[in-house]
Amino acid sequence: MSKYGLLLLTAILLIGCNQQEILPSLPLTTSAKHLEDKQEIELVDVVVQKESDEVLEDKTTETEDKPEQIEKDPILVVDNPTSVEVLVNKQRKLPDGYSPKDLVVPNVPFYFSEDDPKKKMRKEAAAALEKLFKGAEQAQLDLVAASGYRSYERQKTIYEYNVTTRGQAVADKYSARPGTSEHQTGLAMDVTTAQVAFSLEETFRQTNEGEWLEQNAHSYGFVIRYPKGKEEITGYSYEPWHIRYVGKSIATEIYDQSLTLEEYFTRE
Ligand SMILES: [Zn+2]
Image (cartoon, rainbow, N blue to C red; front, side, top):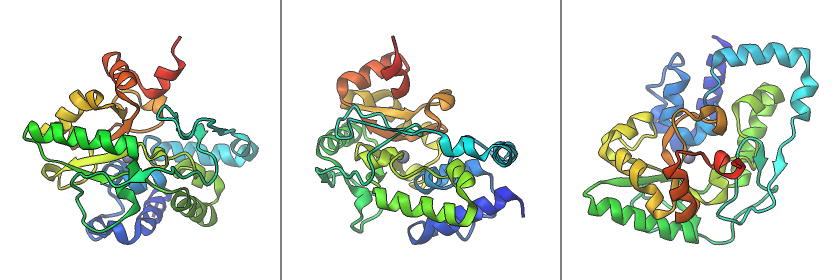
């Protein structure tokens, strides 16, 4: 089995009970892309995205040569974790243990019925999401929510498991460090539709729901956080299903100028 296969296996094992539906039919030879698209939630955590196997090969060598470089790689702690404008990415993390104080469950359809913290969003974002879903409904579309808030503890568990089983260098390459997942802000939600069997994959963009979301999310204060063609800037593959609340003004500016959140905050 290739190193990459082992990583995928690790990912699959970590995916655990809430992802069972994809396990039986998922061969280890399945591309990372497929895996990632199917289950963005855990794959952002575990397998990650853009960097494919050749990167792993390169990194393995580099790691052996200069392990200190990875350990010294600084991750800045954001000073505005409660702001709806907070910028969280692989270089910018939330403070350790941060948890939003105003999490609520938005009144929108989810693809699962049981109670789960991942139904939650911060109050302002949840209210905006409800309006967005109303707008979609009025356009006769069938949006379904999949995954919102993810706790620091859950991310930490996944990351530490990877460090233990694979070593820190590999864990850093293939799992988000606790605090660096945007889902921890309570401002992000993954949405999908029955047309793609409620999965999180690029084909969502080709559905009427995906197209509507791309063209209208900003009117409700959301951005498509990881756009196509901006992978190098965001550090993530195209995710047409992942929307992030930033408020209407910023969202509209980002939409009109085809920016990422990173570009918005660093522009002149
Ligand atoms: Zn997401």
